[in-house]
Length: 142
Image 1 (cartoon, rainbow, N blue to C red):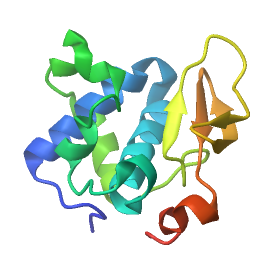
Image 2: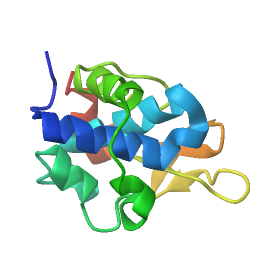
Image 3: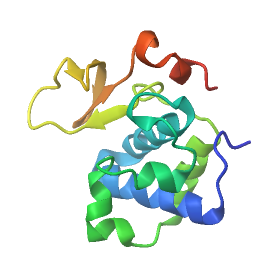
Image 4: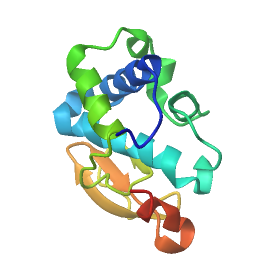
């Protein structure tokens, strides 16, 4: 059962985001991007208050650089659709299990990002999750 309501067009949109943001990070990297996106919808805190749908999450201003590039607008592949469905069905993967942010720095991962603690790095991306004080809801959504 999906943890976020999604029509076929929403699944395709999420699949496109996974590929455009993390194709170079492989299957797990794309799943981690999906986890962050679903967390943003479910947590309803910090910069992500009021997000309720996949399109709102994907197109939130300044949220994902990939939406500004043509590669994002290509049709999703079957493999990415399968990955999108996994995260929509609640599968969570460390280090993005509770993360709301990730980014690819040129060097080492900073210890905080948007005042939230560093969790871990996966390949070239650093992941950050909120503390319970700033976003307890992210820990209670599943």
